Length: 379
Length: 250
Image (tube, rainbow over all chains, first blue to last red; front, side):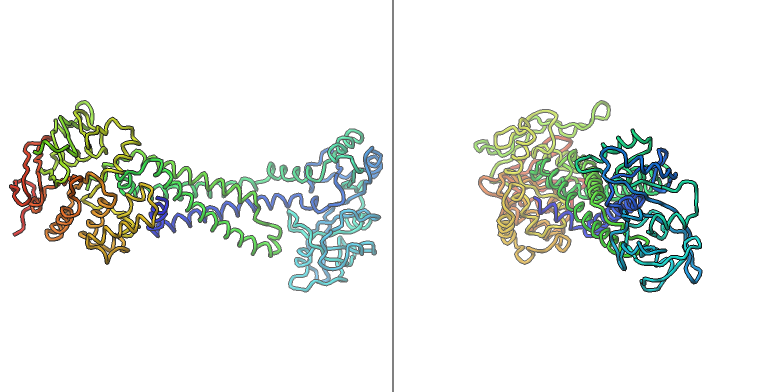
């Protein structure tokens, strides 16, 4: 009987294709929006994730997310180093100087000042040049997106000079770090250089990066640092989630994406569900004939669930393929780099499609199960 | 009526009501009806007299409101729902006025549906269905979809579907009503030749007087009761007159 169910399904080509494309579109929209949403939120902590050599970030107790910094005192670094279990602790500066090219093009940049001695936090993925060259005076490493923004249409080239808040610097490397939340050029330089670009303030230490000693858990060390210094200490992962939570709570991003995702679910449920329901209702006479011949209700349930499973699976596969192609194309583009089809989105969408098809099947089944097979005798 | 042969269908004081209270309608008002194996029994009468309801109750598709109906000496109303379905699958074949073929299946696949429902493997079921269709003169239309078949061809496919699993009782509801005279005659001839066997009973609900000469027995129904029964050799049946009967073509 399975083959009869499948033939009934594919026999009405227009409805069959309509169902598949509705589910495919719903799948595409859900996977697309949830992946972009997650990708954008992930960007809020991308600079944290990019620092792989330190495990703990120490900051002012009031700091809620990466962009929001209140400078620490230089002595705080020494206090952190004095906590039991700290293998090493180094300074990190974060500022936003204006970068200006020789031909006058300018942009606010995202400048990270790395510990002069260790260069902890330097970009590990270099496209051109070397992060070790940051030891040279007045040198910066710029990210590719920033370079393209400042030098549109020009090939990647080292040795070019630009001004950071009127300080002339030379590009010694071009990196490819994860995209930041804001589309600013990302500059890496030494701490001692960076503080000069931004101008002198009483305190300038943005973060202290800490590496725990072997055998000391990062979470445990965070608690010790907080207890002994009164500062806030978070593991890299905790800090990334802090950023995500901050943006979720304080921006319109979740509302906007939530609306689109809700619409996609409603469209999926209403259109795919209703089309499948109507498909079954229009075939009621056929189901009645099969029922009269002696097919049990359980077999009919199996047939309808098989039909739902097949259209759901094909539609979901097509939609996932479309979403995969979408991200494959747009992940090559600078503004959308790093946005990928996340497996969590695929799993969530798959669960939604299963829910939609089960709901549609239940509604359809109700009509089929209460159907009197005697209906077949009515002309 | 032959009383020495065990009846395929025996209904006594059979009643069927629809609705309750003031809206209750008595459709069957104490029907006594027999159909014997080896005979083509016509159930005739004007529209609305309860013919279709009677065969629906006989087939176990509707429950009666009173009285008793026995199929091959078994009261199927005492069966569980599943037992009734299994009984129907094994013992009953149906031919409908509107054919009720599955539009996505070929003629051979449509004819094979009862076998597939019984769990026969697809290839074996379709092969067997093809052999039945060939007997019914449909050898050159085995792979055609219903939409590509004429009314007469569709009814022959429906007939093949009713015969393919060799049921003991075949119920036909107005099988010629949607067909012209020649085609209807041809379908009835095929039904009489292929369906009627010593162990098989065929009941045909009709008020198409043009095909009455095929009957071995005729039960006349009116207002929810069997009002007259005739049993004789085919072609000797008296043609009754109904107000809405299909007129004999000259």
